[in-house]
Image (cartoon, rainbow, N blue to C red; front, side, top):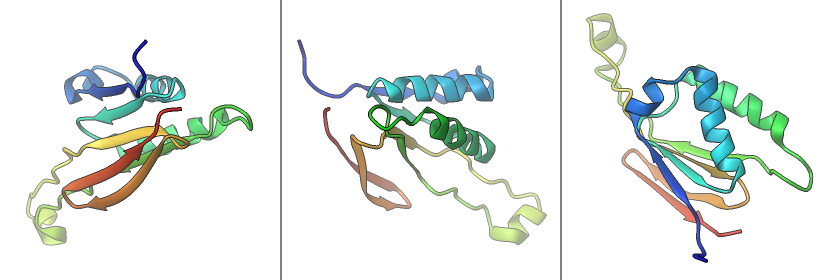
Length: 120
């Protein structure tokens, strides 16, 4: 049997076909199995909040320890005046999610996420 960590790379196209709760369940079920999930495009702020809320209910003392999640910051198109004059935020961003006991974010910059992943 192969030893290691499974990494699921999920396209923005696939996520676009799902409801918010379907996205959350897809991510959380994968992470609870010990997989690392990489989203081509991050979740909306309300979806991130709901993911954290649902995760908190799933944590058990001797079982699931929660998630670690990191995402690139949004690129802002011209700040306040850019948005006022019709600028658009670029919401394309990579998000990495995994079990808190296996995934540790080492460094995050505007264009780099560096993580350490351990097998169980």
